[in-house]
Image (cartoon, rainbow, N blue to C red):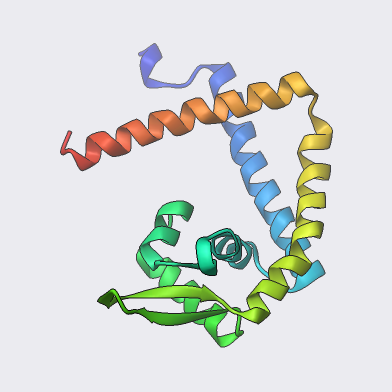
Length: 159
């Protein structure tokens, strides 16, 4: 029966992680909204576009990068389009597809929001960790991401 339940140490670690995730994302979202009027999901989309060649990406690429469902991205892009942060343009090479393009307003918004967001991440996360803790945190996250990616490959292969 031991394998069925988390040990007390595992349970404490898991609940600590869940609380960290919830508190950190909520705080970063509030910081972005207060300082720049952007939500964290808007910021995440703008980052994807600002770092892409020609500041444009196909919707499926954004979904993959953010691990979002297509419907979530579609709703998010509609809201951002209404705010003038992004535009949708047809893909000439593929008549069925489209690009999501960073607008001038979107580029200005991310340039304005990024310094405060980076400062908040540094203040809330990296200023709290020594070099060894940061390296261990990165290694732990990478191990979990790798395991999830491996499961994703198996699921796609039908196993």
